[in-house]
Length: 253
Ligand SMILES: Nc1ncnc2c1ncn2[C@@H]1O[C@H](COP(=O)(O)OP(=O)(O)OP(=O)(O)O)[C@@H](O)[C@H]1O
Ligand SMILES: [Mg+2]
Image (cartoon, rainbow, N blue to C red; front, side, top):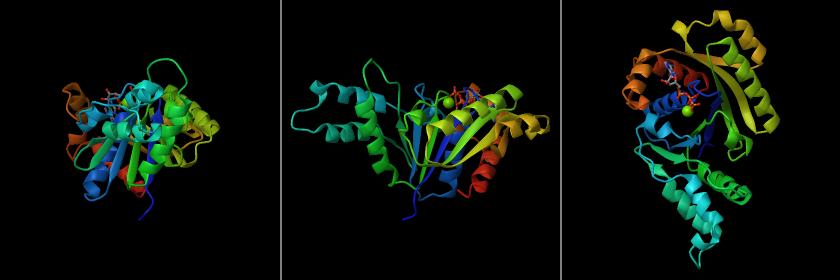
């Protein structure tokens, strides 16, 4: 079986990470009806599920909190087995996409042990999939703890402003210091007015990132978000849908 392709999306708050991830997943499910796809919401303030139109009851954090308290591990069960059971309970299965939501780590104390378990578990899990797409939070918690290591592509999103691009450049520098094993790191400029970015060429250059593509400001995205409709259901003629499809094709996904 071919090795799974892992794509992580990172970037400043509100730059369109979740929108991009949802539309990437939309592209992959439409193109490959028979491939296994895992979506990971690594944002503590999780909302990828809403963009996908999926209900979530359990998160990884809830499972990790249980592991931390030995009284909650049933007697006769090892912590590892209990963890595996709890994490599989947190998996939301839909037609084509399985979704894991990291959730919000609660309470004080060290998460080293559960993090190590989670890392190990994800390593085992990912090989069951053809594609894994990870929607990260602006703070890049999970990237920095290297819960998800060995990614093929990291996509840093920036809105179409000079300030946004400088922030993307800083995110890139942080990611480089994390020593994540990433195949390639790209820039995607989002919410561009009519796809126009020529005024930003200098700033793009200064980020040191390779520009993979742009996602135009799309009224349909705004309208769907306004009416609380899953972005996953955007029509084929949405400019954002088409732009993300072109980006996915560029990556040969
Ligand atoms: N291509 C687009 N066209 C128009 N609006 C967009 C586009 N992409 C994102 N938006 C809007 O920008 C806002 C932020 O988008 P999104 O939630 O995808 O960003 P994010 O980076 O995931 O944010 P957060 O850091 O809060 O998780 C939303 O209101 C969304 O509707
Ligand atoms: Mg988001």
